[in-house]
Structures are given as structure tokens and as C-alpha cells.
Length: 85
Image 1: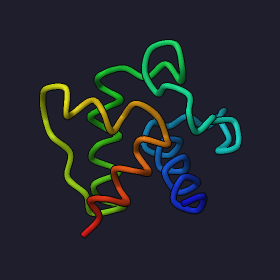
Image 2: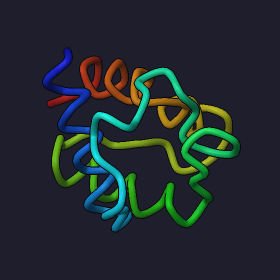
Image 3: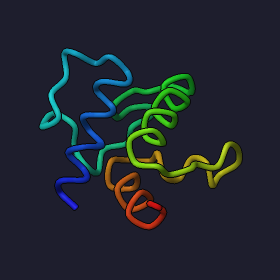
């Protein structure tokens, strides 16, 4: 799971062009949106596409179910592990 979390962090950094951030600076349990990493809805779209390409998983496009996997790196790792083809 730690390898998966590292890969997710690398995707976050590259997809969102966060060059000033290193994977080790992203806390697994920290929120990705709002006060945590500070991502917004446009970032969510870009990140969703990048994660789909990298891991082959689909994300819901609307509603609360769409937000849950993007709560944190931990949530993304759990979602990808459970839904990877």
C-alpha cells in the first residue's frame, strides 16, 4: 500500500504541476481539498483523468460518491485498491 500511496503522490504532483512539492511533503491523511493541500474542483478533474490513465480506475462524476475517494491520499489508495481492473 505504501508503494501505491507514493505513486498517487507522484501523479498528484505531475498532473497538477506542483513542482515545488515533494511526495514526502504530502501527508497521507491530510485533506487534498480546502485547508489541506488546497486543491480545487478543476484540480479534481485533472487528477481524476490522470489517475484513470495511471491506474485504470473510473470515478463517479457527481454527487457525494464522487468526492469520497478524493478526501486524502489514504482514501485514494483505498479506492484504487478496491476498484483496480
